[in-house]
Image (cartoon, rainbow, N blue to C red; front, side, top):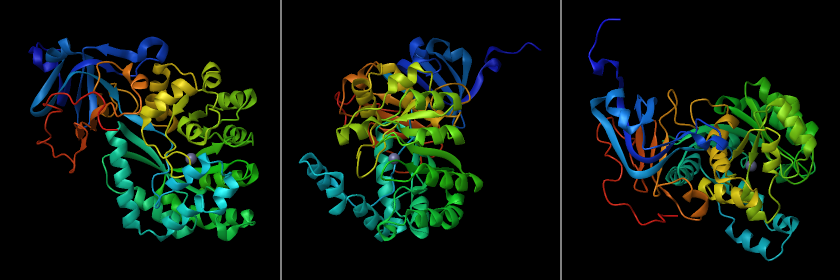
Length: 442
Ligand SMILES: [Zn+2]
């Protein structure tokens, strides 16, 4: 090696973040403090992190391009972007009235008789692809503002070949939020197939999957009491796999109904809900390396018990924390709220919940490029209106994220989504103005 100037050993970057009170890298497990660096900084090039360390080392370590973006977190906490591994974003219509009916004591059957999920199916079928895409973008904006930078997004309210494909195309509408699209044609039996579930499964396997597989990465199925049986779910997942899709499953939410065991049998990436999982299911998921996706917002909305998250953790199962954002049982896209609910309802520690909402979500989606702030990962992070991550579950019900960066570009500044994909140069530094009042804009 020839002698070179000091700067030539520095890594080239076009993006620098400095001024973090703590940079939560998520490079270590919860028991080891999540790899948080007090006074941390990072640098990126072309949207990928090239350096992480203490800010004091930044000048020697990083060579920032003259036109690079230099962001000052102004003494606030910086976290990896949340990875929401379970959402049902593209739908039309509202079911807010149903919530009041349920609180007043209406049963699931009574709600279904007056509409229920069929209200969403009807509205989604009637909506144009453009309208669904518009609605999806509004929800993606909200997810970004709350710190989510990667989200899994399911179809499942079209329930015809054309309408499922329409939902998936709408879900792929251009937006800074990273997405993983999932075909969920086997969400439930649509009204026109009432009493003929096997005929519907045939339609899903023979026609929907061939039409939708090119539009998605994942195939999901709702395997539960009142939804699809294990045998039906197996047919759908095997057809999905044969069409090139990877697998995930709604399992053991309404009853202990075999979904987890099927997830283990087929090697699904995740099994989701799991309220009724017992030791047998937990052991099977552990042995098969299936991620357990916890959805506390649904338990909260329905007023039912929470999934046994602690038992999964103690068995060594990787858990993810997701929103289950959907119009019927969890109209909440805010993973900060899920972190708070998981601490209270599932007895996770704040760091366990935060890990599950970032690194855990990435494992559930089998992505090794998001979920932590490490060299080689995407430069996706959120800046809190707080000095410490400990505020997250404690100061609940409001949006503590003020600024969000996706791929080294400012996507949310001071609570406002950047309207245009930030061009290489203008992207203004984060929050030059004084901090907004604690509380933000929930
Ligand atoms: Zn779901």
